[in-house]
Amino acid sequence: MSETSTSAADGPNETSPSRDRLAFDLDVDICVVGAGLAGLTVAREAARLGASVAVLEGRKVGWNASGHHLGTVLPGFGLPVADLIERVGRENARELWALSKEGVDYIRATATEDLIPGISPSDGALEVSNVDAGESLISRLQTLAEDFSTDVEGWQVERVRSVLKTRRYFHGIYYPKALQIDGRKYVHGLAALATQAGARIFEETPVVSIDFSGIRKRIVTPSARLRATHIVLAGNIHLGAPLKRLSDTLLPVWRYAALTEPLGERLSDVIGFSGSVVDSDGIDHFRIVDGDRLLWASPETTWDARPKRFGAAVQRRIATQFPQLGKVPIADVFGGAVGVTVHGMPQIGQLRRGLWVASGFGRQGLNTSALAGQLITRSILWGDDRWRLFSPFELVWAGGATGRVAGHVIGLWARGASSAAGVLARYREGARSRERAREARLAEANLKAGTRGPAPRRPLEAAARPVSPPAPRQAEEGAEPHPHASQESERISDGRM
Image (cartoon, rainbow, N blue to C red; front, side, top):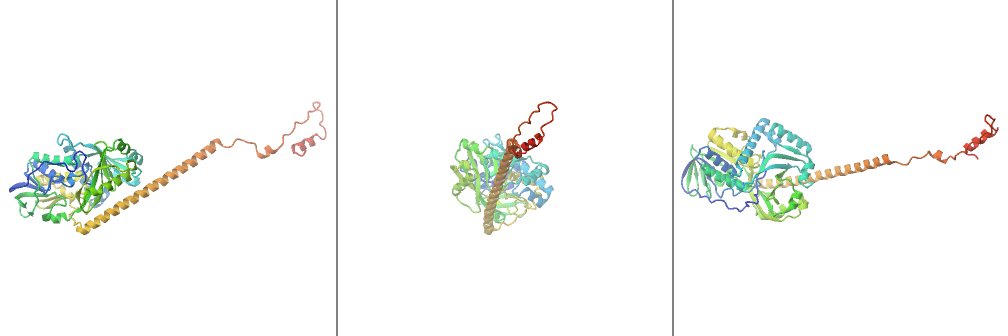
């Protein structure tokens, strides 16, 4: 799942409570660098368990990807489940998947109206396929349901198209226990909950340098110093020069989204599904907000660009997938940068004693930031070592500028391949439909010919034969016939008269 965009209710420019920068020296148990979803989860959970926590944020809470996403929450990772099994084995893959489900449960328990007013949670997410992949769908459903104990439903083409009026989608996987939330309210609500638990959040406080040696680590900021037993690096690609080595393991990807103007009843006529919809190729991600507005994420780049430039691209994408909607009016366009790992999994775990990382959540989904926060907190305070499940997914250099170019080319190729596969799938479907229609017409014609048929008629030779006149009556019963009567009768019968 991609992390981009926000909901109509809050908008990308909503102001959040102002928080002070760190202006005095401070000693804490845990210092979290980065006030995004993962860092705020660590702060809240650690503070709830009695640790002293300080969060250092170089800008504002949720200013980047954590505050700009569609709010879709469902289990899993960016790495396909079959690839995950191949990489770590079925048993470890099952445990990793269970952690992702714990992440979903955490967000569901947190994103309530009691804890975060206005969060507006709703249930259900649908993953649709751009190609006719029925056999692979069945295999994946069996893996998720039987091996990974996940509530899923397989939707046939007819059912998908009954709620999404487009021929571009085929089969689908429905997650009834997935949910979607107001993403911007969630990140700010999480910050408020962390503060209520006792964590201290400092904005506009970038990290200048870090000394990792010793039991007590030292962090230098522009206006103060901080000491901590544990440091959690929960930033993205913007961790800064002191942590460049970590930032270089992430490929920066900017993903853009648009919010339409109210579209009225015509939107519900075309899209009759109230949850989130994502395609299996990770290209489109959309859902309805405020009843009749469409929130749609699609274009992405490996460089920073002005979001407004992509409004027309989103318009075209919506019109391509749902021609009935036409060129929809766009109310706002916005975007955020995510860090994508080379191996396709998040980076969660301990780098060295007292130094932890929670990063690489691009294309992972919200559940991973929640599971990372819980897992690292329990590792620090309880000795939970399940973070080692992520050890096979070590830090890998993303290639720098060359990696960005390669990532952009690969992205273009993937989109092109997906488009071509979709065109081929729709052509094949059309060919099958035409063949079925032709066979139906032939069958109907044969049926009519068999039931109605030509009217019964006499054989041709019978029809051509003249009717013989009756034989002459005998004058008396038992009298001898005329000697030539037999011959005369034969000549008449043979038509020789």
